[in-house]
Amino acid sequence: MKNQTGLKKHHLFPIFTFSSPISCLLSPFSFLAPLIFSFFIISYSLRAQNPDSVSGLRHQESGERNWALVIHGGAGGPVKGTMSGEKEEAYLKKLNEALTLGSAILSKGGSSMDAVEAVIRFMEDCPLFNAGKGAVLDSDGKAELDASIMDGKTGLAGAVGGVTTIKNPVSAARLVMMKTPHVMLIGSGAERFAKEQGLEIVDPSYFITPERLDQWKKDKIKDHSQLGPRTSDRKEEQKHGTVGAVALDQQGNLAAATSTGGMGNKMAGRIGDSPIIGAGTYASNKTCAVSATGHGEFFIRNVVAYDLSALMEYRGMTLENAAGYLILEKLKEQKANGGLIALDRMGNIAMPFNTNAMFRGFVKSDGTRMVAIY
Ligand code: ASP
Image 1 (cartoon, rainbow, N blue to C red):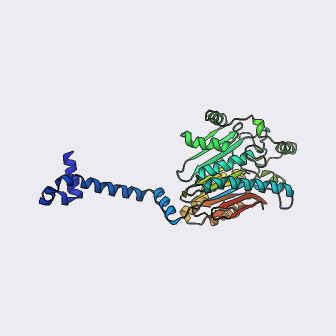
Image 2 (tube, rainbow, N blue to C red):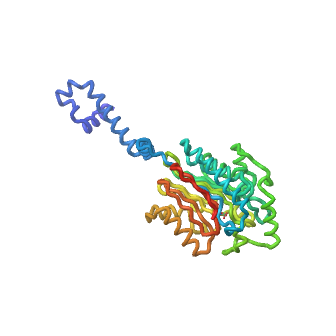
Image 3 (cartoon, rainbow, N blue to C red):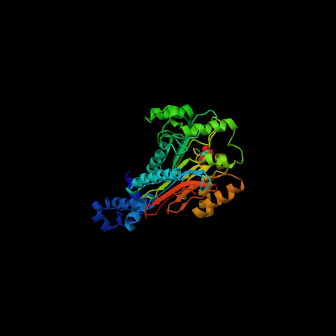
């Protein structure tokens, strides 16, 4: 020990060596001085290496405490003018309520993860959207639900697929992220886990609304499958409703979440892009947070959500250009229907879609806010 201390002293603070007469006089202090000096050096360099503490400080000093929330309620939807005014109003009202709920969390300094989970839970509970209650039905007439969530700060993510009894799949996805070493749980394993975690479990019939049942019966009679490469306009109308949210909180952290019943009349057991990290959902504080909606198979094959992040990270593209390129060029060329919402750390927002409509909206700390369908 003595040798080690001596070596450090010689190396770092030669002025305090015992060979100098002054240092001999100060010898009781020379023992403490290097320790105090080292403490300041180490604590300074730790602060400099921790981006959270640096950006947190910067936010406070400059008074910048920006936050933003963007949501979607699915791409597809009807041609403008074919949906009743009442129904349009009902969708816009729910989108607005979701924004109000999320902004209450973000404006009080709540985390982006809490905001996206709360917003998605709200939309899962709303029968208008194709997620949770009101989900589309698979070819067996069941609602099989997929959801995922990703934390842009830590890079952690969670997902559930093909679940039929978890009232709020997005919360199960978050618990998979927080309480297991895994990213995705599916089917009965996911349901058992959700129950053990104390999430609300419901009978599978809870999710089935008369409108979705009616739609399923019509699809059955016509033996329609929506899984072909190109879909008709009528089928397009039926596909909307997946829900997604991306948020930036006052600490500068991004998060994304998506929840869906998938595509109507899908094969039993089919999993879409929504619970697949990198396809339907992605978040990284380095780039952006993304939630996609549309023909899931294309979004999986094109790894759309991660591709957006990669275009920003490796190509230096802006959020808007990267999002527009993917939806309006790359996917469109493949005749893949859909859209996405994306948000970066500066609060920039992109909401491109290549369908008739995409239910969407955003709210920001600067007071800007909008909801739209077409
Ligand atoms: N992307 C979802 C899926 O393929 C469906 C949708 O967003 O409409 O499961």
